[in-house]
Length: 106
Image (cartoon, rainbow, N blue to C red; front, side, top):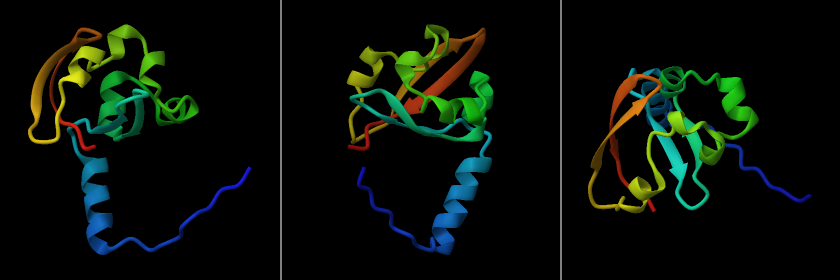
């Protein structure tokens, strides 16, 4: 196996942004669209879905491995996303209602 790593000290702005996102009461996540893998999920989202950070890291939050009742966006929803604007979705997960704003970033 060959790999490389880049070590850097993040800027104060990057640290502040990361802290704001991680401490937000709003669930925030980043998904790799083709594989439907969740690359990042903040603590609020994991709490909303009842997933521990350890469990999330164990299986890299493969969306296809989550129970259907835990999927916030369907394949059809994801296919409609674009880079220009946020699209609003509504979802019912485990008896809880979620309003979701999403857009593509690539």
